[in-house]
Length: 178
Image (tube, rainbow, N blue to C red; front, side, top):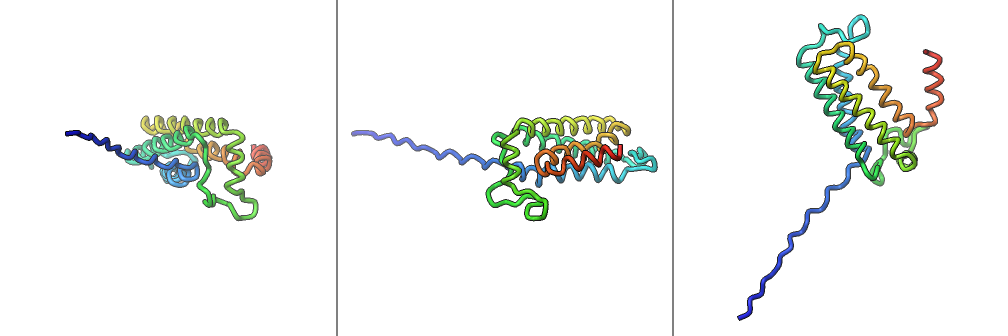
């Protein structure tokens, strides 16, 4: 009698599709930054900074958790390889409006300077980590400053990759108001 042993190969699961920059920004980074701004805006006092009387322990925890979540999401972007802006056919914000840029235009800028984009994402992750630490310490001055600066950290990347043609205009405005 001859025994035939059969080898059964289980199919390896298909790798998960790579997240795109657009998906991480739209589904993770933007909503988490919104949480930070919501907490900060609700606590603004008469002196234009965070009023500690308007911050409960729950608010501080929400701020810290939002900052940690933001940091983790941004690290995904910093580690993307390759950097893919969007899946084919997906429109990005401002695409199709006058002055808006297409996904292909932004992807070209990503391809030209991927390490610059990763460095900017890393800088945002560090900023979010600093904010989480300030929130855990209930450091009103530091947390307020970091919340205030968050928009500028984001905007620097947007000016570099989304609408670089507006960079000179924004710099002129900043210099005129400084």
